[in-house]
Image 1: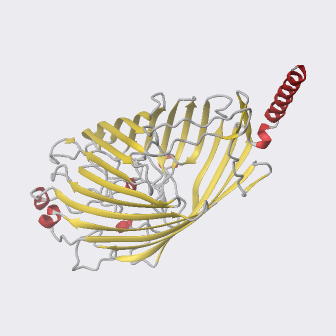
Image 2: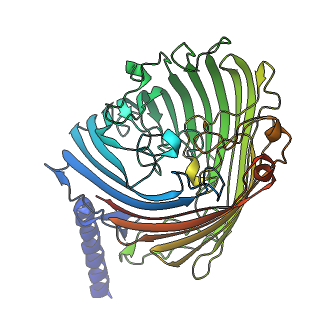
Image 3: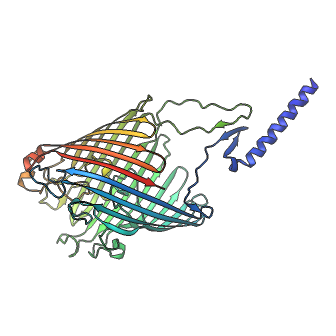
Length: 496
């Protein structure tokens, strides 16, 4: 018995020593020792384009998309417009990040965008064109601070601003040029919450010229745009992310920019957003625990199954071109992902944005959609923005294999009021002129069916394709041509 007891003590000492050594080299082996259990964490893959021990890192992107559109702008089979065509969109990006110290980072990114074989004029934004924007500066910023050491950081320069789901502020990356801002952004970041404070002006793409913002009077319009805000985000409620924000937009309406005798644009947007975490309501299974110090694989994130939800509300007050603004917008969505093969998800969503019920008075109720990525929300054909609209959406998503996702959506659209225009995805262009016929028209705009397939071939290459059909509604029939419209595309994106 004494001999056996001696061996047990000896074995325990050896095990303790082994665990101590293992813990000492955990950073090398990717292992962490907790409660005498060795948990093997997945190894992080290194970036093949990083050099000098990560001090210099490059990133590359090449995206190529073929599109075909018919009646997307005029809903008229009798006219073969320049927008009833097919074309290629090519975009190349190259970036370089310098990590000079753990509190000082510098980043620059160039972009070259081309619209090829199009009958449209290749000027950005003209007649719906994405246009040419030859080799230009997309991002150039300096970041001070390290949130691991101190929670406050400062990023100054040309950068992406993206908040929430991008319903109001986004990179607009579907567009071949995208969107960036000349901005200064302070960020306070704690474990369960963060607060951003920023001031910015959107960068305006111009063919054959260096893209500039109003911070340097780049558009030469004396608009003097300043877009600023506070954006607070927290995970204090464990099952969801909760966001609160206050945004402000100022623009001068001088003689060189939409001149009018009423005044400038100066309004606030106050909003809130909630979104459930993936798998927050999935059945929880107890993780297998190691015994006698044996290694186990670290627990994986929750499986994205079960119930999910998201919602957002935004209210606006102030002035738009001298008119008194009172407007709001609402989004709500729910879904359920079944824990079966193909992981089918069924979704239902509703989107609403107010419209102006009397364009002749000194008030305006049209919700101002700011700088969104609308392509993600209101149909692939980009015929609606989050203003003067009702949108009911049904969706089905399946994953037949891990790398392939198939999604089908159906949208039914109504105008909130026919006293206001039907605004396209950019929030500026309208489908039909606002006249007596439009005001007397029915408010059912139509419906859209979308099918998209995404294949992540590997971690570098993604291939995507889609087809959409728009079924014209009463509003189009009452105001002019009302033929259905079609849209299709195939896209490949290579990223390093």
